[in-house]
Length: 297
Ligand SMILES: [Zn+2]
Image 1 (cartoon, rainbow, N blue to C red):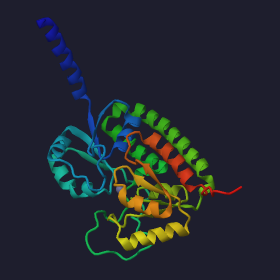
Image 2: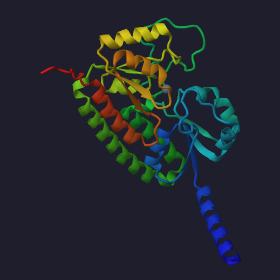
Image 3: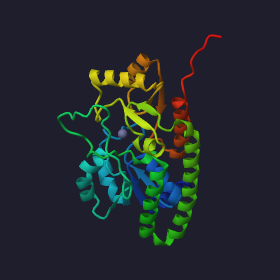
Image 4: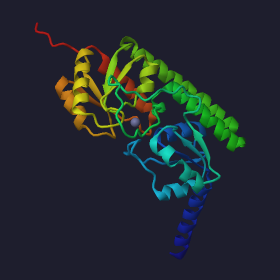
């Protein structure tokens, strides 16, 4: 019994030690974990700041998470998400050796949309005016992955050939995805879609679509804004409202009901980013196809 226990404990310790000796890098959101793993394989442990189910704009790290940043070598942050900016000083103080790398580096950034209504409300804007949802575009993800590859190679030079080979494979997959989306949406160029929270601006830009946001400047829409959106949706013949899984259904459903439209749930924060993008392309294709008009024979 004692021997068995000792063996068990021994095994446990070996496994734990092995895990602990792996270098750690931190990312903000789950899709970035996916990107790092495409490049690094299982060479490093990826620490994700935002837990599943959290909204990317409301999230605040816990003191424990900030403290644990000290274990990481690199922090690949998204670049323009609220807490990343407001917590940067605290995080840097807690982990002075940590290399902070913005995944927005070298990306052609968009301004945060303020659809139709161009009156700016008084008060604070969570973001700095830059649309932070860079990861919803395969083209952007190519740039993000190159940044990740460069930084990892600089930190762990012995792994550079492996990282670069993995990057090449991933870029191939991204090109395939991009071609697939282009083919799927080929008949939808210039069409518009409506979404509760405007997470798809980069996707819309890449595939020549127009994104209309129900949420207004990151805030719950007013009755007036809701009414304008309903009128617009009628004018544009919009038959589906996209809703991000982390957001509440109620407001999107009000508009959907008014328009007799369908609510389509997407999850841009899903860990399996590639699957989510293929699924998004299919959902978008269905949403943008001309409405089937019930005809009486
Ligand atoms: Zn967002």
